[in-house]
Length: 525
Image 1 (cartoon, rainbow, N blue to C red):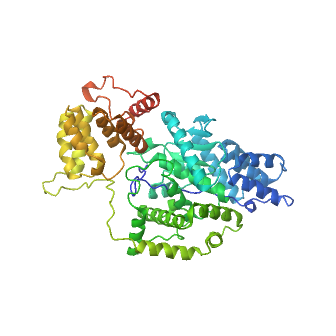
Image 2 (tube, helix red, strand yellow):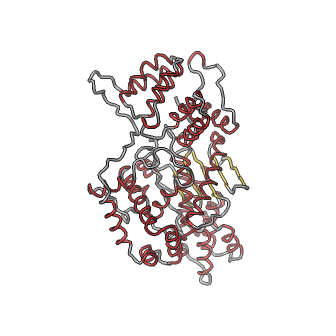
């Protein structure tokens, strides 16, 4: 399978929002249209208890009610029951039912044999497709609970408990549980989808260098909260713009939070004629034709909604969400006119004017991957060859030789954290801690959040007698790549080569120790 794309601005969090299915998609009994709509709305708003009660009191023989029972079962994670309901002959020629049936069957296959973890106190329901990811469970639950609290405050909505999350092992499984086409996910680098009343997310283990999984969870919870707040009537630009806004508000600031800066990326696209357009996103950013188009779209909606909230305040956002829920035809323009007295078109023009007035200061560009061609000296010292050879040597226990290859590589790509941490690791292995620290550099020397880099930085900070800085670095490492050994094991790795049998030290804390053991069980080298 093609590797999930993790570039662009760290990671693209392309999302398909929870789709409200109109009751007319499956023929209803003549006497129950209002009841059917109430049931459909309750499910869309994630109010599963109310939906259960309404369905319990309803006519059990209605095909439309049976469809809503299947839909509720999918929201509850009971895909087997949904598939069984929709296998009835009466649904064979109903397009909406057949689409949901395919989703239910795919979902049932993914969750078969999965591990279900319920934290009733925190109100989180977590299903793991792969038991190897069990060490991540307490981290996921904590992050989801923290993010949900902040999102509820910011959006003025109370999320029902439990919040449901499914952690899957690959893109094919993500497609099966969400309905997002695999090709679309590969094209845009999608790693998570908020749909069917839950967060569907790929394990950080599935990617070569991890991804910002904590912020991804916050992003997806925001989509669920917006679907609940607006009865899924928020347009895509608002959904994605607010979800990007909420990604980082649940936690303290981190390095590279605005790399690249969405305002400047949107401005560049506007001035160069490459703008995607706030209202021209199509059904999902995940369905845009190229990674660059998706990156621009995210920057534009992020910048636009940040500008709009800055101008109208959080109370204005709350009113907009209430109006969207109340407007039956889903007319976002009418809601915006009602709240602000100005149309959406006027707000877009104002935002574009704001972008044009930004000063011409070049933004710091992330170096998500180093240049892999020949070096400037023309002698053919290919960076890729050095990195690959350094990895092979280190894996065989030849740290000094690996350092000889990797140390010069730092000067070839000085901003590449992926090169710097490799050189530092090899130098540590060769017993040269001072040179390791120089090779690693500081956070100002690198251009992206990298899990192993921060893991080794934490080790250096601890050796220097800075425990608080060390702990901060370890947390950043786990936030970026929790199942890399350097991040999970506090900058320490198991011996390689002839000494591979030697016992490797483990972190003292039980949660981090379990994460470290999990990372070492399935090494990436």
